[in-house]
Image 1 (cartoon, rainbow, N blue to C red):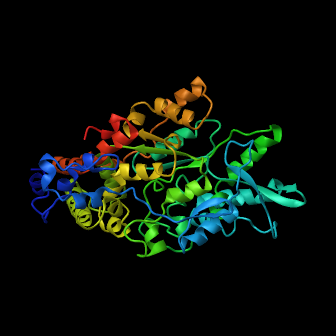
Image 2 (image 1 turned 90 degrees about the vertical axis):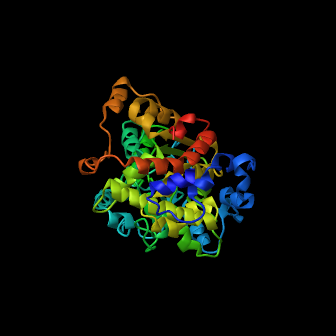
Image 3 (image 1 turned 180 degrees about the vertical axis):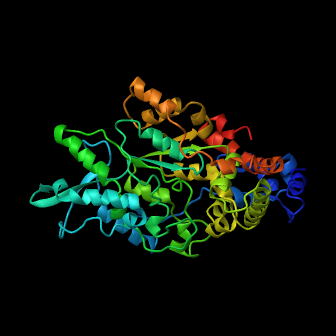
Length: 455
């Protein structure tokens, strides 16, 4: 019945014996943590195929210890790891809440320290900040054992996703806490893209942005922490960033490993973050995946957007995803860079449970705070107080609390996109059929029924 209905919704264009919904009708019983049942209506399904489709948590990776760090080692990425660990320290300063350390400087300190920074070349706003920092660079240096040192910092927290789920709004409201200092850009996309030389999603790699260039972005905060340490023995200032690609975008693995590793990426963004910062805090904000996809289409879509165009793109993308599932496991399809590029809407971004489980395979549950945009929109004060608690930030004054509630929404839908109206009921029905098993499983993983979005 589901299969037939789904054909009808896409005007009979869906072909092939099976449909993605045919597979997914067994999804809640077939995901990790549940045994695959073969009773009743499921007897006609091939159990070995199902096991292939749903066993997406098996991740083989060679782990080697270098300089006391666990590194995921595969021939080519090793150079990336070594470059990262040659810059970052083994441990951070004990009296500074944010992860910071003193970096020893070598060579000519009078040269422009930010002149070659690739972020500065890409963003005029950042270039101006760097010009300002250059002026006071030598004053920021401290001397230890006759050597010059510079205070460097990494983010204390990462807002990791998802796109069109309110990350900008969270980021801007976080700014209102006096201990939070944020510097542009909101989304450096370093861990997922620029580290590999990918400037824009879907493009081939160019020049890799080294870790130093990423750390330079947080120098304004390092300076504020340094100043706060002058009068005190400790500092509670923290910084963070909000690249909404961090949670899900591992498309770079294809360029990194080629086809030598089989169907799934051998290491993910979170493996590298964990190797560098095992104690970091992660925040994800999610929304109804059906609504997220339409918002994504309106925001990133090209000319001639319409509800009909969206419907056609959804049908076409579902067909492609379904085709992948016939040949590969679910996890392999979600991380299939070629498929993700070929689909005209970003279906995979809404498959939250796949990403959440992968992050929880590396970080502990109490390091990941997962929020819903719907709750944040209804009561920003409550969601922000949850974030402040999660980040061990002090309570806010009543005045600041009111400010957080009153602040306008950041990055709302454009008027021209609002004029297109809602998606078609048939599109909504299709997407609900597709996403609901994933959301059911997400609710189980997070032990919170609200993450089903009543799909």
